[in-house]
Image 1: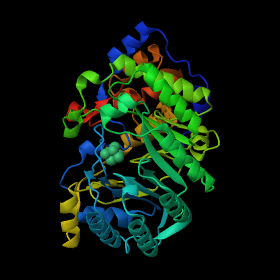
Image 2: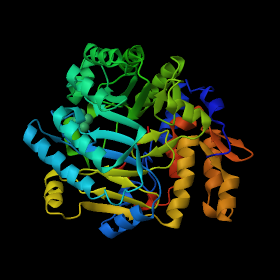
Image 3: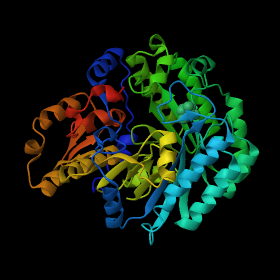
Image 4: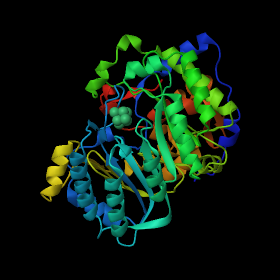
Length: 469
Ligand code: SF4
């Protein structure tokens, strides 16, 4: 944990720029393409020279407990902005076959996980609630006989509100899921038409009310800014509607427009996308409104009610970050099961192959499904710790960095002082005796700061990343 708990002061200093010239200047200089740093090194550094032995060695060497992620990649319809590995599928049989393969993959970890506890369990996708609930009940029952789930394990599930019904909600409550993560994106009908995702405020409210009537409180809502036809005014209405629904947590993601990698995003008309300055204003307004409504900004793109564990963790300075985003739990190893899933251990990251059919064929043939990965070098770990500390606690502790490495800051990162001085000048950072601390603006542009410490960025293709603004 950082010894410099300076975030609370930053949060209450949400002095965001109002002047258009200042905003234009910032957008022109900071709207770069860069990673979101859910990990460092990022997934684009993964390569195919890793082996199943690397995976087994990493798991055998680890003594940490587990965050278990299941990737359920089927949806009933394609959203044109989608950045996930998914497939449109409505039939029961292919879903049953997929879950059967997923269960077999889990079996392969049973012996390796003896003595480890599952402390976090997340079903993501795709659309987990597109799968018949009996199939999910069977799968989760099987996992609970294979692995040792902590009684207090955090259980969350991504849901599409368009498919939710009372039976599903009751089943999820019975399975111990205390948190629903709902994809909202934007309530405006024109924006919804431009992204091929239609859902009304009333539809969402009905499901949230039902969930709460069952005594369940945990609701997360995901929004996206930068979608086609969004304006500051239209998105403000969505923000107010979301505030009315009172979710415990809100994620406000920047639309990752990467049509080079996600071909279906070409269905979105580029001419309909908001200008970078409009996007930036949408973001600033949303941050201001959520904060005024009492939410605590978490990291660069999340908000939580003050009594939510994520907000408490943020204020205590012990927030963590993994491929699922921000989390309250300390260092866990993450096992990702299913096609395209990523596993993340202290010194090793690995990703399963992405093709759903090939994944199933390999599993059924008892062949490895690992496709790419990375064994972290000493330098990767060193930079990872700096980037994690920055992304979770928004400090750059120069003294600690020099002490840990035995090398001066300037020698480690040539030219860094000049670059940080510009960010201080631009209002992203403040200097302190320990180094640097983010301002509210610096929290929103956190990716730009993290990029200064990324040792692999120069050898990647910028088109692989989304824009930072
Ligand atoms: S529901 Fe989610 S995963 Fe499925 S297509 Fe829409 S955005 Fe993608």
